[in-house]
Length: 580
Image 1 (cartoon, rainbow, N blue to C red):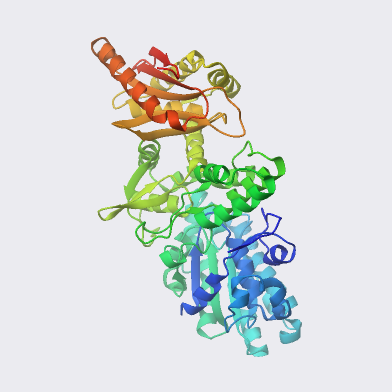
Image 2: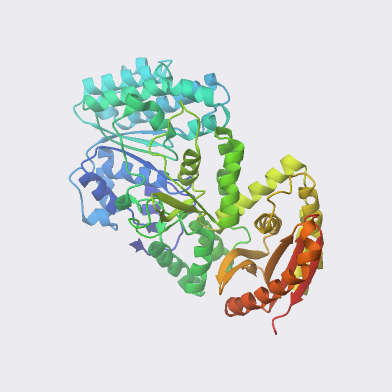
């Protein structure tokens, strides 16, 4: 259920700010009731960055905090949980830690940052509950030089002062750890070892839970590596991240996104169905449990709210599909390779880009005492939001890129790799000018020449054995994604095959032509023998694909057969117009 209000809460992770200031709220409070009924007191829940974790933490804080009982009706009265109260509402003292923003440059800065985050949470707790626990005698906790001593002294004093229990909330539990995993894995292993301060801190939390001081915990993060590395030091949490019955706890479902889009379009006077279809292409597609058990796919809520906020302000779609902060958060695919054999990681990326899917198994528990394996890498990609579960093939899962925005980031990463490894650099302004010729004048010669120059640089630096049409397509798509002018689709199903590339309109940009591209590749030794046959075959396929795609086109449709050789030369281009 979405309470209809005017303001969109883009970038607002604070529940009272949303509830009291007239912002739209996609009601996730039914999950408060579900969590409480679960029987598990210590919960661990993972989702990618910008997926609503901080807002849900804030919602739990204000629902359970005894200090906010007088605000309950004002905050929750309009939502599900306000009409279906649980027995534990407003019955806890809340201890909140947020471990984002820690400087991980050295072990000393990491310890200092972690310790300050712990003390900040303790100071906030003391200020909130001074009438219950008093303000004196906290110096031994606040002057401690290690997180575990600060936490242990703090819990001892709380236990002496009151019988009331603590609900512990931890946001971004692994934010600092993910930086270490990418750049300083030995340091990470030390921090979670038996003598490391991170492990010791969580051991104190485990003791506090065993003694009954901490009655409940809810911990969020992105990956399970840190939790798995703590092993017996902190083995009390139930991980609900892959549970189908809690799949939709964070993120927007298709129904929620459709309803929210309808509210915005009603105010803008725009076509609800059209805007929703665009957003489905861009942002939908996340599934974190097996398809046969899952309840539909999820949208990234931050991306949805960004798009709708920009749309409502302008009256048309934003030129950039994600804001710069989200692009930075999600633009770190390359960091994962630091944990992994690079060539094996490249094989996974190539499979995703060439075939759109890759098969493997989710890692049940990560173990940093052994080398990272292929399934570990796939699992990290899933947890970080770079792939999603599509279904099952036998005893393996099938994974794919969730949506267009993530696909764009893959191609950006591929271009960065080509630039770093081979010294390739495309003049993006020239490429965009070439794409404008394609879009407004219906001319493809400039693109053929640019692809030819790009391929010749690529092919001069690599072994040509095994290079084929799928590799050609990836390199062309890498170039095309440097421009925002088209919505680029590949491997669309058509009769008796899959068309290579469809360059489709991408609002808000107006164009004169949409394009279907059919790509062919011949090795140098095949050229004389196979050229005519491949040309005829390609022309036939292109006509068929254009006929299939024509009903989807909103602008005059052009098609081009482009044939490249092992030398990187464009040996043949044939353009077909909308009228065959």
